[in-house]
Image (cartoon, rainbow, N blue to C red; front, side, top):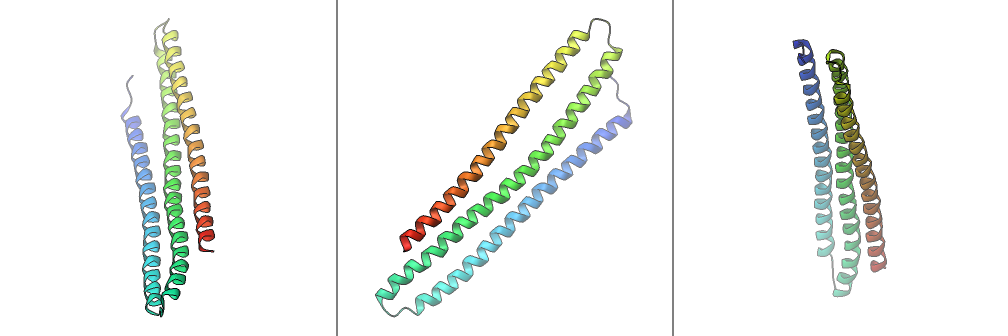
Length: 179
């Protein structure tokens, strides 16, 4: 099947736009990740300075023991919050990439079906079975892709719920231990 140069140019332009969108999503994800890390670093530095000042003011071993317990709690909460923030940024970026991939797969499928329809019009008599077989194969591949996509979404939702539960349990356990 011969494609006109205009069709090839349009296809190239669409692929370039998809690549630019993918790069934009990746850069936005990296920027959000950098913001999370920078915020955590600033917070850790400020906490370190504050803890050093508090340790410098300790007068006896009993006061040191009490201070140790009070310093551990906020650090654990911040660590779990940091892990959750990193996961959230990664999950959001992955979700955006998945949407882009789904759009590209859908567009590709449309183009293949359109191309097959054109081939059928110019195909010799009796080739309908071969075209039907190709369409059936494409349908099976799409169905498999949809099932995998749904499974991946369910896995992501379960992972999110597990991270939230683990974070909550870790903070709760540390609060009990400090009390």
